[in-house]
Image 1 (cartoon, rainbow, N blue to C red):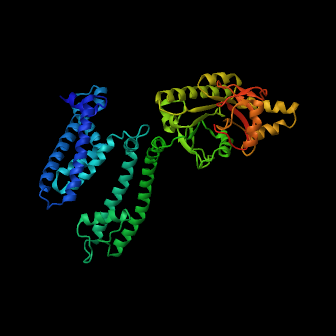
Image 2: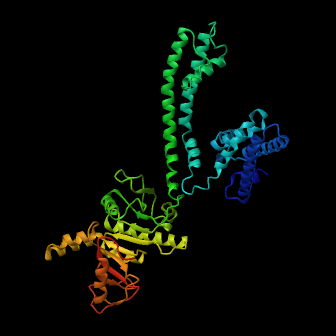
Length: 493
């Protein structure tokens, strides 16, 4: 019997657990709706007593569920050690006590206390029980992270609460002993002293009780000063424990957004800082969102125009963080902190992962994601193409070729640099204007130049082969792709 209950209440992979959780979520939602309707109708309404009885029945169900969940808990140490009968009993008792003091079980306890008529207002807390699911968060459930932070730092929290509790008890008892004989003192009982100490320590200061003797005021001054240090220490402990848990929400922010047609740069590291300046010169971030997808925290030198998403682009399970299946294009860059062969190996793995991920997504896109890859070793260009890159740029070889050609053709280096940079005539790919008749290259190129100002320098075939400066009799069809020089894109892509 206990084994069956343990499976139903604690085995997340069991069918009975999933069914039970679904039923509990439904009852929680129903109880919150009933609570809202009761508040709206008011106690004078004829149906109020019926709703109150139904809600009391739900509260009893939650009491039974909490009791069974606690009773069916099996401490892990029971299955790990071979204890004696007395030790086993002690292990079960302490194990259940620790389980009852866990954050989510404390939430459950608060909600079941609503069975008492004086505590019926606690029914609204039942909504917190829905945090058990957190299914909207795929990578880093912040609610689970918060509970884990409490569990992992319980000793720190116990230390901070102990300081606050000790200061409250000492201050409250001291004030009671000092002020109890004063005629005008508001401290008549120990409870009054403890209440005053807690209010003073937390800097709330209701003013309902205040010291009237000189010794009492001196004690209050000391308590206020100690309260500043105690609360500062406790706040530091809480901030340290919860900061990383809360920051995990950022991993979900972009995935849950509605960004479409954005650009993604995979594998960014601080060594590629100049790339960001080049991207900003080509892309207006006000019109196109540019996402940097890399490991670790956002580097300090990344301009605010870029969105930073932390993750590993070589893992298919994390690509959805950057919504790559909804992106217009993806750029995979090589890591400057690795040897060229190691960086290219990571680039190839990223390319394989992106293509597999996009194939599995199977979205009805008009055009597939265009993937551009950078390789640092010329031997890996073909490998990158086979891995799924639509275009491969061998940056090291490109720079060396430009330097070598400048030696034999002085002045060409500056020209080619201007062509590759924004703000000057650059190379673009477009199609023949729809109202312009096709014909031989020698006739079409001057007509396009006269109408648009674009200088046609070549043709691109259907299989992606480029022909620069083709012969004048080369045919230019209506759907041909033209390579042209212009200050900005002129022809339709």
